[in-house]
Image (tube, rainbow, N blue to C red; front, side):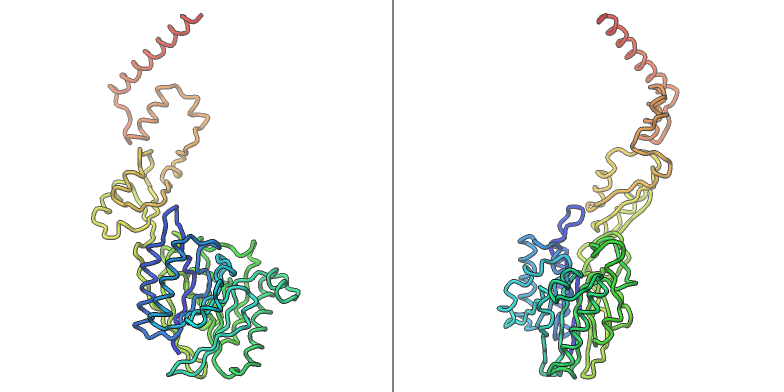
Length: 391
């Protein structure tokens, strides 16, 4: 049986107040195309389907359109679980009615021991279990068991799934688990919402070793832990500049009757990439004129050591999607926005000279300096006359 493992769609996400909905539509259409062209039997979505528990209407409409293409038009079943960004109850609304359409949603934790058994004309049955995101308090409440850490909770949940499978009519069929968690040693990035504070959210990979394949969600970089069959597919898009060097893909998994799997990563191409560029303003603007990817989402690090007026406006004339600006050049020179006390002690002429050099990059020449002195003297004389008239 051929599976397509995906996770962390985060439909409806905004980045620096920019909606990524069209970017998500673009990459989700590629997933639909992969399903059709590679003859996928089952699509897995390992949590964080939406970006927040109450998704915007446009995000719900996009998911509805994508699932309609996969389940109805292609006739491919979909199995998805709730992640820590999702509302389990909202995601799982209407799940029982949708089973007939091939959409299997495991939202609330109580549903995790209801397996999905899928068999095709050319393959033997494969059993799927889903463990939606659950913290220790949720596990205690649902199963009346004493667990105090994420690791203890996951150990208990995996044991429950393993025992349920071994005692079922499909005990000898391959077993695939979907889970949304943070495996200890996994590589994280800035766009992932912490599951708890201080590393208490980590769980051991050993809990998943009894399953033939574990489709993981939560970490946005593709990776595997413990064994190649315990794997994060990664998010479908870059959701932070810390992910600029990550390669986004989905995982194609072929499982045979013995439960052995062959794994292939299939790349996804974004509508706009997300990357960091660095250099002086004039260099970046010159390079941008011939940059075919100048519409990418950008973080710009300017190395210029002087102040520049309307720097964001200048950048966006060439790079329309600059989302964030950093000025390490100014920081390195100690030229901070806060006014230093020693600068306040300077006279007006000295302060103006500093200001002029920061803005223009060149010092005042003698003629300009003389003109400024005359203007300042005139201002002082007018102020003295005004003060005398008010006495």
